[in-house]
Every structure is written in structure tokens, then in C-alpha cells.
Length: 170
Length: 454
Image (cartoon, rainbow over all chains, first blue to last red; front, side, top):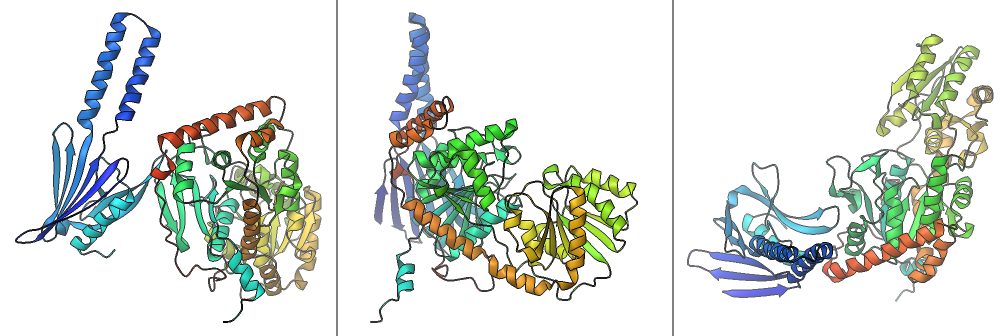
């Protein structure tokens, strides 16, 4: 079993290679840091907006409740970590862990994956890298990381491992 | 150890640029500006530079695409709203442009076409962020009508702080300098070129018993379609052995078809409709004379393509047209029907002395996209040598744009600067990943792609 890690301000990447009795399992994990600064900014904006308009107690209480609601709902949807488990002879499992405790898993068999690709996504405000899978019988690509957007230095070793597992050339 | 010769040392010392070409007009749209950007980019890549293009999305074509020789194109998902132009938002394009400038390690931003809103915004944001900027103007504009007045004010704002500008003819330079107030010493004249490998004459010379006059242009007012309506019946009446081939489409097509019906010229005037660019050469080589009736042209690549195919050109003497071809390859006329008919007569008389292959070779030597790229490279080097200035020094240039306009422009730039500072805090430059350089090893300095003009 070996671990390799690298991190930046938002993401931490771990790789764990487990030598099982039947095969080697390659686990790649991306842990997302909590972004408290943005939540505080959002709540402060709501508070300032509401308190500016009215100074009555009921509005202050309403603003506080709204801020608490925003914090809770944002935390429930926030991703704690995403994991790619590569079982070379079997398949690839994509896992998403949320702070609420919910876990979403999807298993793809090796035969169904035609090729993993590194894409550049362009939105109206930014560009970022994304790792996706070309699946047999599907027109659209399947993103490996559904919620987070890790940097390419973390995506590259995962892409290489997926290429090796699926028999594709780099 | 062999010593380097002076030219080799000069090549080694030339700096490699990473150029971002910005315009609303690019492939899959087809036109003069689009082909200029593409051909120039390919030749700059063959000189060893890295070129990235930014334009808006076209339908489903959105995101990153790669063209020949690793030419990367960003189709930004901002939809066009009027005549292929992106909606002008002033500040909303700053985040995506900043992102691209940083991730591609851009050294020079090169905007194309005064009518492109994306170009103007890119120049504004690039100067705010301290990048070197070059602007190429491809068209002539007026001074009197309300549209031109506004356009010229916008141009004055954009070019107030640009490092250098390029115009495609001396007439265009004069027009740009007058409209924008840019000092003439900042403006370079680099003409367009033509892909001589694509536009070559027919192997066998055409018979002169029946003379074919070819017209290929957009059938709009600006391109003189109304002149054609007057000229064609007159020429057909004077010369029974002349017929016309008209390629192109536009709002004036109906007028031409009415003219054809009125004078019963169905067998002497063929209307082909819109001609794909790949088929332009095959239409040109079916004629002896190329007729251009534009009312205004900064350069006119069409007559260059026609001359490259060995056709004698008859053109209106407007804008930069007289600068394009030597006198023996073109007959110029004033944009009035009577003068154009006389010019066509002169051209018909001159036809027996025309050698299409000799004409093609001369044009091939006169105009080359590689030459355009080398000259543009010099402009980039000059732009890089311009001194860095802070915001306060740059604001003084905007203040000179007018009593009220100057102050307004300063406010716009200050807000842009503050927004940029906010973005530096919200998403620091270190968090934006740099794209690895994937240029092929074969695209080195001094290497021309064999058998490929551009």
C-alpha cells in the first residue's frame, strides 16, 4: 500500500495503491476544502441588504434565520470528497461524498469505457480542465468528477491511470 | 566550433511571441477578415510563434477547437446579437479574457476589425492588465453619418492606448488616423496577400471569341450592385460577344434579376448565387475579365485573387484599390456607369496582350502571407519594446479624447481597473493553470511548410 499526495488552496489529492489478493486496486481521492470565506461573504451581503432597509427586530431575526438557512443548505450540497477507484480487470467506480453524509456511487465496467479524455471547458466567465470518459453507446461524455473541478496537475495522474487500466494510449 | 553568421544570430535573437488574435469574425464564417486571420496565424506558427484565436460561439460550435498546425481557437459562449457581433457589455468579458490571457501566457493581443465589439473589449481589458496590444483595421469608414460618428468615437477610445496599429493600405492608414486621432508613426501599413497555390490560372488559355466578364461579390449597396444594374445592359448592347457571370448573394440580387428580365439578358447574364470560397477559383478561371464595382474598399482581396488567376481587372477607383495591382493588370474607372463602360472597353481591347501565367507569377512574387507574417512580427517586436505605464499615465491619453467623452472614457477604464483588482483577489493568477505548450517540434523557426502558401 502506498500513498502520494499533493494539494493546493482548494483541493488535496491522495493516491492509494492497494495490493489485494486477486488484483491491485488504484484509488484516487480528491478532498475539497471548505470554502467558508464565500459563505461569510454571502451571509454578510444578505444581512447588509436586509438591515439597511429596516431596523425593526422582526427583520433582523428574519435576516439571521435566512443566513442560517443559507449556511445549512449550502453545507448539505457541498462535496466533501470525490474518489475514483480503478479495478483494472473489473471496472471503475466513481464516488462522491457530501458533507451531509450522502454518498453517490457509479460503477462502470472496463469494457464500456472507450477512452478517458482531458478536456478544456469554456464557460462565459472562465476556463478549466475536466476529466471525462467516452462511453460505448453514449453520445455525451461522462465527467469523472461531477461536482468538483480539480486542477490538471491532479487530473493528469488519474487520466494516466485510467488510460493504463482501459488499455488506451496516452 | 563553427561561428554563427550574422543572419543566424539575428534569427536566434528574435523573440518568440504568444499571440492572441481576437475578432468576432472567424471560421465558420467566411470573408476577408476571417481568411486574413487564419492565413496570418498559420504563417506566424511556421515562423515559430504560438498563436491562439478568440472569437464568439457559432451555433453549437462552442469551447476549444484545434485547427491545422496546432492553431487553437476559443469559441467563447457569448452569442452574437447583431451582424455577427457579440453584445457589448464593457466588463462582463473581463473574467474569461483574463483567464485566457493568463492560462495561455499571452504576450501580445492582436485585435482585428473596428466593427468587432469583442475586439474592442479585448483591447480595453488587455491594456488594463498591462499586455501589449496591436490592432488591425480592415475597412474604411465615413465621417458624416450617425453610425460612423459613434463608431469613430469608440475607435478613438480603443486606440487611445494601443501600442501599434496595422492598416491594409495607405488610404486605410490615412482613414484610420483621421478617425481615431492615432499618431501616424504608430500605424504600420501591411497589405493583405493571396494564396497563390489556391488561385492559379486555367491550364489552357480561354478562347477570346466570346468574352466572359466575372463578378463575384456580396450583392449589397456598398459593393456597387446598383452600378452593375446600369453597366451590364450598356455593355451587352455595345459588345454582342460579351457575357457576364455573377456570383454572390444579397439584398440587391432582386434588382439584378429584374434588370436581366427587363433587357432579356437571360442567355448573356448567369446568376450563380452564393459561391463557396473553395469554388471561387473555378468560377474565376471561366472568365477573361474580373469586374469590381465597390463604392468603398480598404484593400479588396477579390481583385488580387482574380489577378492571381490571370484575369484582367476592371475596378472602381475607390479607397485602397489603386494600391493593389500594377497599372498593366487593372483598368480603373470612376464609380459612374459611363466611365465603367469605357473602362470595360479598354480592358477588352487590352485582352490579347494579357498572359495569365505571367500575371500569376508576378502576383505570387508581389504578395505572400509569409511576407505579411514577417512584417507583422516586426510590429509585435516594436510593441514589446513599448514602455510599461501605470494607470495614471494611461488615463491622460483617454482625457484627450474629448471634453466629455474623455472623462467618460477615464471613468470606464477606472471601473475596469477596479474590477480587475477584484478579480485578482477573488481568483488569484496563481490559481489559474497554465496550459502546456503542445506545439509540434516541426513548427520551428525558418521552416516553411513545403507546398503550402499559408
